[in-house]
Length: 237
Length: 225
Image 1 (cartoon, rainbow over the protein chains, first blue to last red):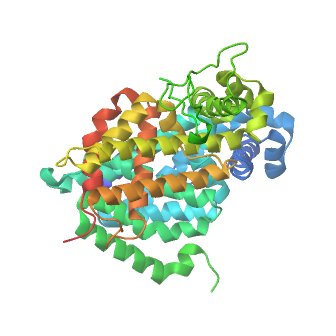
Image 2: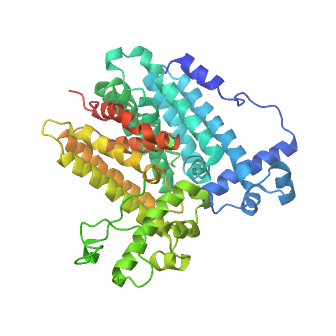
Image 3: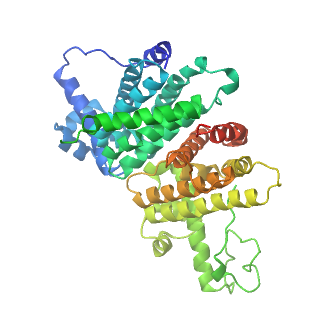
């Protein structure tokens, strides 16, 4: 992935990527409620979530919650916006720090999978239950996917025009990655997301650079999993 | 456009408006119509299934209720519960019904193609026409089902596997060959997600234009020579 493409995508994100200043207690409570909303939606589903369940997770009082948010839907929408943008920045930053497009794609996927395995409930809210929420969260979700597709497309400059994939390639690949993430999250087997890394690398790289590069990317991803299985999956020795 | 309703073969009457090959009315006639009770019950079930996809497209997963579905189907909520245990049971039936229709459309188009026609292009063209005519089914089949609808998640996997098998047949191979196992399923997952995104963006009427791009992506060689 070309650094300038990632930088452009990152600049488009209205979030703070450096360490924030110490926060006021009320802001911390508010952010706890937002995290709680995502956590509860991930656990109980959007239709099953309630303010009570959020407060059981985050602590605090109902009155304080309604001072921060108009409703649970409002809280979820604000939380969704903040977390999906933050995750997008994290993925792009991991990608931009890797040498070359192919390594960047793998680094971005590794960062995404780490989030999925470490915060599965939040990931369920971000990728699965957003469809239930609809409205503004879905719009933010689409924006995030389009940024990632734009970043993937940065490799086009290195492809001969006659070998270039169709314009839809970026959204196609991103859709495939997300569908895979949703499948493991829906099955409650988030650690297994790592098993799909070689396949997804084949899908992404093959769509842009053809079969030889895809096979190389597949083998590299498989080697990474064999080498770093314990570290990546967070498994005990 | 509302989808056609077709009764199961075992429920087809020997003659009259509910015999094989006759278009099925969306509403049964009022009053004493003499239609066998098994056909009435099956007709209600099909109306509920078709209404589920429409209600979902109209209200979204967050707000859709059994009342919405029943009203669209023209039955009472008590009739709804005679057919389905809850909303998610009805959603599963709607998903399976829609998936069967999609696969049938593709198979009919591919089998009836000219000898020199590209099976993949014909299949994609049929799928895009199906979704363009009934965008609510693109949303139903392409969206990630919510966690509560766990059976629908399994039904989605089955649909993806069926489509992947069709993709392999279109390529002239029934087995994945040397490419990684599961790659075709990922390609089809990506296709469904992509089409769902286009429909959600209000581009259902332009789906046919995506045919050449999808063919180009799905036809890209995945195994090095």
